Image (cartoon, rainbow, N blue to C red; front, side, top):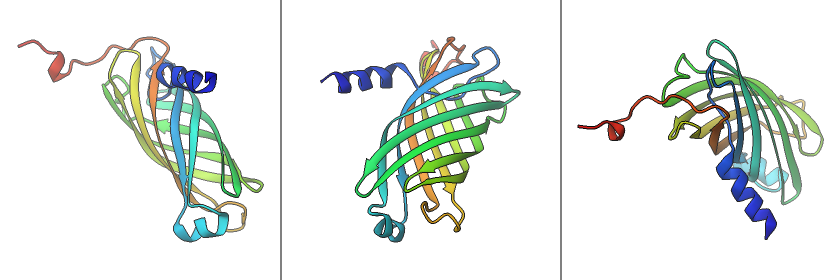
Length: 179
């Protein structure tokens, strides 16, 4: 009974993503999954690996750039899937907006049958709904070279809540404006 309560508290009090020069640190808990093709799934024992929670920490680094580190693990059918990720995100100069789209590039060590490096390319968006909280959607493609037989290239989508350590100044939305 304690584990679901702890996960619930973490999920609603943490997550990660876009910050700016005044709000440098964010933390996160997200729901994520690894999606393999049906053919790859038949070889490894399943094409869909659910991961919960995915834990992230990120820091605004330079103009429009954020460094992000993430970790998640799961066991599915015949394989354990653990990933340690490090990416650099570019936010197009929108880090002060309520909607913060970004692209990312980085790498991961995916430990399935054995540790395998991947090249990560992706996109994401954070929707800030309160000064300290937002919702983050992200899609990463984890490219694994053919010489690494223990892991195939795959997609890695995630959704989570964002928590900024310092409240953000949000732009007014239509429903916030008074007529």
